[in-house]
Image (tube, rainbow, N blue to C red; front, side):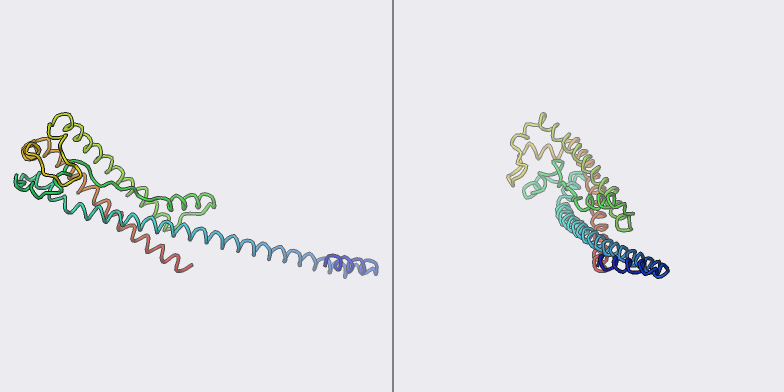
Length: 245
């Protein structure tokens, strides 16, 4: 093809047809420019298609992360409903000695809480993608940032405070209460008379239950529920976005 165009140019020059040569040269330049523009357009289209594929995979990962978080939150919220009454029984002084005979959750009051580790793989992938491609954050990215920066941070603070108070109480009774060595934390064994007496009468036990109750049921659980609600909203937005692609 190149030899063909070169031969035409040579013939025009040799025949002295300068005007026609210039017109031909201009046309050739235009054809080259058009070819370059078409090649660039195809390349840009391929890049955009590849980027869209990567972005859609990231959104799918985020959706999977949020789905698993929701399942874990549901387990924690459901389990908290049964133990809340046991905290309140101690705080309100309505717990009786005979109640300990069939109280499975009494062993968990003041001694730990269900932890959660929120999944952030997809969110981190999206942040890296936006940085690498100089992509401005859209409404979905903004909602995700708010979810992970605000709510996730609140949940982390809740867990730290719960851990601090629960561990402090554990350390105290470990060195001061003779019933501690025989206490069955994970099983369903009977409670010792010494522990029952302690749980019903000790001021520190009741006050600790009050502190942990406030942190757990008035901060931690509400934050988890809010996180769940926001996660469902984001999943809906992701579904709509993928559907419209």
